[in-house]
Image 1 (cartoon, rainbow, N blue to C red):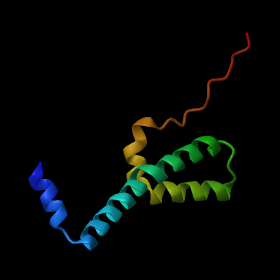
Image 2 (cartoon, helix red, strand yellow; image 1 turned 90 degrees about the vertical axis):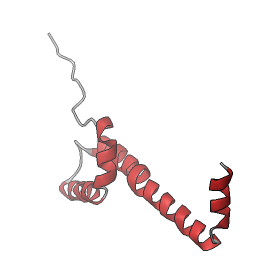
Image 3 (cartoon, rainbow, N blue to C red; image 1 turned 90 degrees about the horizontal axis):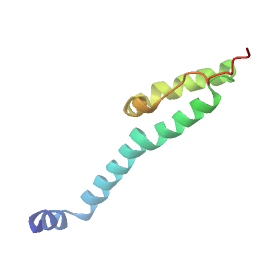
Length: 85
């Protein structure tokens, strides 16, 4: 464990800043923003206008890798309607 700590401590400060920046941006791109896109799509999917739907398609295209990671949790099926008998 000391060797890893020593190796990190011996790196220049700029290298650590760039590594943390890359890690933060990748988490933002792959998890955080696609999560917000998912909640936005889930709330507006059935009531969106044509321009808003085009914007939704753009968001899905732009954040596709992150949405693909979150895809096991996506569910765009309509809500169950009550059946009157």
